[in-house]
Image 1: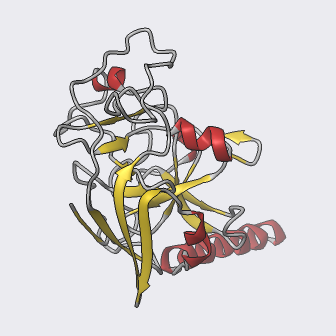
Image 2: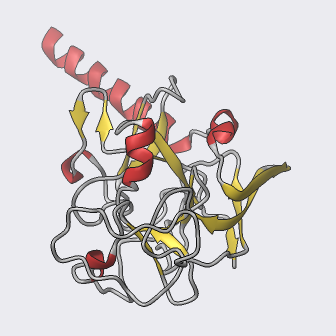
Image 3: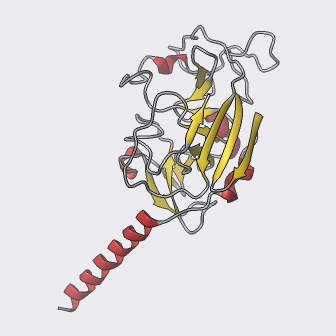
Length: 241
């Protein structure tokens, strides 16, 4: 009987924790000072943070125009690398993101195009090369830092932005999705995160260095869907370009 009561209490505690997590509202203002990049700025307006970015990576790439100081030949390790015909160009992307994100009642799928912003001002894209098309072939056009530009010159990351994980660590905060929830690298503590550690949206709730009381967050992993799964966990703001 004592064992039954103990199990019952544990189940009740777990259910209560899950309920608290699902109704929690987070404050992401402590991580905003980590954003720094070329042509990147932000301002707080009420319950939102508004990022304006020219979407210019602060690292080398073969996709810069040849006269740019950051132009570099491909120095990566993919033997199947093939440069696409596009060139990095300045953009004018505005992301209005909730400052106090929480779980959405109805989850939304991520669109093609920008779905969030990395800490150096480069936008994140989802796991598709086109409508329901995997990155299988397109991944071979990623430069040495695993990004590339699309037809209008909009540079972006679909998978791990290795310039950032090399600079800040595999467990570092890497940016935000449009719902205001943070993206972290492929390591948490001493553990390499795999898809099995994450839910359908490619995230989970746990403590992080930036949020010691815990927060729902996404992780970059080495396998599809890489950054995001079935959509936004929270309610996304607005992205214009």
